[in-house]
Image (cartoon, rainbow, N blue to C red; front, side):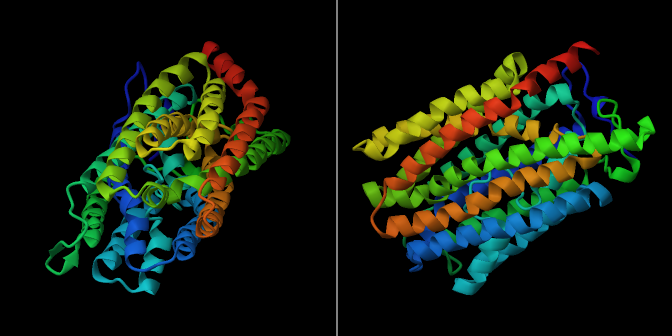
Length: 427
């Protein structure tokens, strides 16, 4: 059985897409919880900033190693099994967090699960399989919009998770001898079991051996080996170009994102409830901008909308270490992050549309590889800089990198918007 992407007509969303969006929302709640709590929890356990940065980096590196392999295998054997396994793995890692404070066990659990990285719904390192599966239900012309809406759902979920932190009394509270920090792992364990059950009900699995798609006719149907070679070369050039540009953005994200809770606490001495509230507002606002991005992308083009927003967000990043109060920094951080990460869905839409359907998992895996590797390096660098007292330098470096990313992204892929417009108008 295969699922055709053209099943979405007249603005209707395929039932499988709705279920995968629900999985994304539930998963994001747990990620929002963990993003606020994890670095503070490890700090409370006596971990150094270098150790905290190292475990976040290790998690990213593991994802970098596994993502390309999973992407290629999912093209061949189907995407559902890998997406399902990712939820079971998260549940297992959450169980370790519930039962143990042993540094080695926690290091393993965090590395395997990606806890604390604010992946916004992404089942890293299994994201290539899920993104390719998700795209198989959506025609090319609708991907910018649907992926942006899915991105919005991710951040609404993370906002919910960050708000829930405020309902848990972190200090001095125990429930059945499990600390309140570890209660977060309990939440994630339950949520992962729920998402596993939902994925089991999703119908419509596909692999290369029986894939069909009206929008992406395979070169095999063309009956030309020469066309196949030319198509692959063209796709490979586009994928590698995107990967090279992504490195700049990945380093910038790794330098700032994973350590924000620690930075807020160290620089301003604010409580975890204030940090959770600020991050919740950030995620909620990002969800709103993702919805706006879906409309802008559909009307003005995916690439053009990404570049314009990214320029503004990069300039705002410079202000963060310069402002004197937590309130002012929170406002700028919320606005900047909402603009920056609100483009995430549109960027995913571009990455899965650079190839034909049978290579979509491969394309997604290279895109994720090029992001995750530099992201994984960032926290390690930031941990060292913070340890030296250089609390501002990571933000300045990140701003310069993201300005460069915006410029090169627009220059390299501006023709993509034109090609999509032509494809849509020819139907």
